[in-house]
Length: 117
Image (cartoon, rainbow, N blue to C red; front, side, top):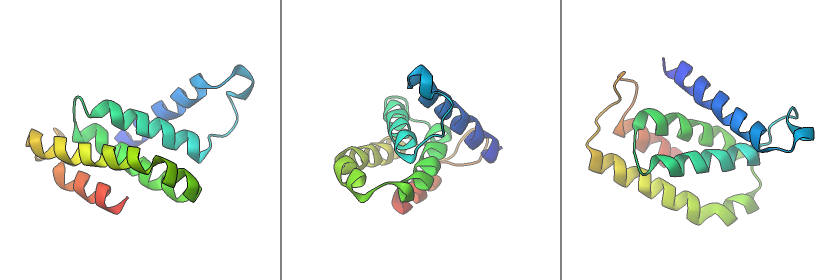
């Protein structure tokens, strides 16, 4: 179930990237920077309605994407990423959500991914 959720969210993010591209570039490979920006946007959207079952796969994708970015990108986006991570930690601790409905994650998993990313 965890891999299925990760796959579904990854597919949705890829479709979002392709929809935003000009028509002549829709089928070209997805670049790490594109995935990084769409994941940040998605994570930002989860802050108003926090859910570990949505945030955890996004953090996993972010964790896989970051090593492929130029250091200058990370430097320019540090404030945004930091704010998102603080928001995720704050919202997860305030929600008291100990786990997800399917038992595949929760506050501990979020904390692990935020601290390791």
